[in-house]
Image 1 (cartoon, rainbow, N blue to C red):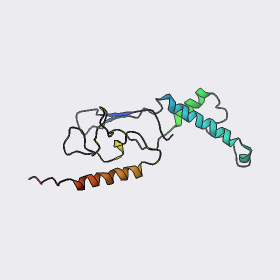
Image 2 (image 1 turned 60 degrees about the vertical axis):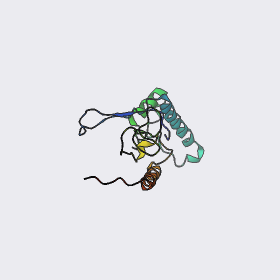
Image 3 (image 1 turned 180 degrees about the horizontal axis):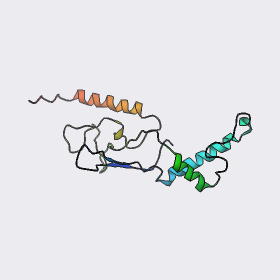
Image 4 (image 1 turned 30 degrees about the horizontal axis):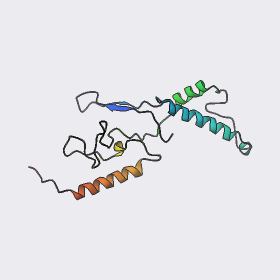
Length: 154
């Protein structure tokens, strides 16, 4: 699924910076996401039943032909769906109350701190996050190079 609607969160779990944060991805909490995956399984089954696949088609292994009811397929999806581990949006860019950084990648209200990674993307892109993240880094480099150097302090 390229554009999930479910939204998770990341929160501090302690005032101690050495304690890991609480990460709750909330996968499949938006029913639209589950519906997209249900439709995908149904479409795959239809395509693979075409006569052109007859000589190549074996038995359906997962979820298996015995799994036919939507609630059974949904349970299979919930039990086995996985992620490609490209979360974004935890420090999104913008000027709304939920935004963390501005268009210069500076964290709101914290002087001298920037975020330069995929977390500034408000929503996930329709492909691998590597290239957009490289472009974010390139933009950050341009922004930094255009600024007056900060004087060194002793």
